[in-house]
Length: 461
Ligand SMILES: *Cc1c(COP(=O)(O)O)cnc(C)c1O
Image (tube, rainbow, N blue to C red):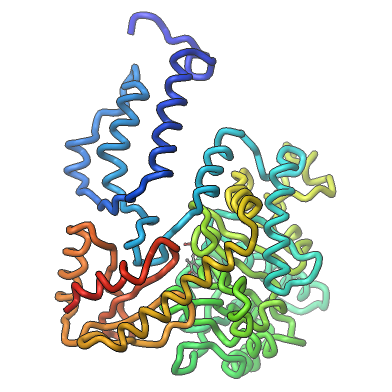
């Protein structure tokens, strides 16, 4: 390059930047409206280096080449989590409205950490959080924030819980314990142990029943044993592996009247509470001090978003508000500042895609879509029971179905799974339970049909 580039070249409205925006939005539109979503699969670092290296240059390769590289090389090296045959881990299935609005969030340059800067966006996010809080049976006054994911949601809630316990100790003149303790089920998500490690606290696991469900009795025994060292009890509203909902009502009863925080990890499963017939399974959630649910899982929003809701948001403010001179104008106001409710400062208005889709379609479509996943899980479970050679590990409670192929070694499962992906039929990775290799269908997408699943079962014959 002979001349120094103009400083405003990338930002000014010009034919060049207009073309760039068009290229990108056209691709986004195409991808959002794909009739047949390609499943795709990872590529080795060597192959990617061969096909995709050299894109960062002094003068740029131009939007057309860069988007071409993404569309033809990089995107096909990523599995589409919204493919109807993506049934591993927890899939994603954003509504068209939600994923399209995610583009608007980016285009709008909203800082959603403070009311002063992002009032409109924060208001709309709060509409969604308050609606969820009511659905979960939390009282008026409950509120929270959308954070990056369930892991950060759990950590933020537990940090608030310990802060409350510390303040209480200070108030009554009691010493803090040598080691703080979180009580949860042995089936709790790995992010609880991760949060405990970050916080340098201990996790004491209570044994679940034969069905994998945590009950109040086991919790009570641990609360008696460890006393005020326990600052939080975590119950799971739908385990990731099996979709098991703890006996939350009895766990809540065990914590009642004791100085201990009740947190519900409903990252995946709490969405099922929107379905009337599933409500009884979640009794007790309304007694929680905090809950999380991930819109990027079963609420059909794009990555990444976790709704973190506190029964009393003021205690979260006390725990999380960052103090700094340059922030004084924010922290000295009584405004609702989402940054102050979790471990974060700068934040994207990541709740807006869900808000837009909910506003567009109404809540009934959400209930129906979630109910559809639960019904499909039951139907395919019956089918598995009826078929030779495969059997259920456990009846599904939500939309996760775990089953085995009789007579297969772990290597057989892996080879089958690899072939399924190689053939671009589906993404079903082997999982394990109690030392046994098993298969698992996690059903989220309303585009996943009974036929999608029976076609996969056919390949197990
Ligand atoms: C997925 C999940 C998490 C972690 O959520 P991320 O959004 O992946 O961080 C925590 N708890 C449960 C029960 C989950 O299913």
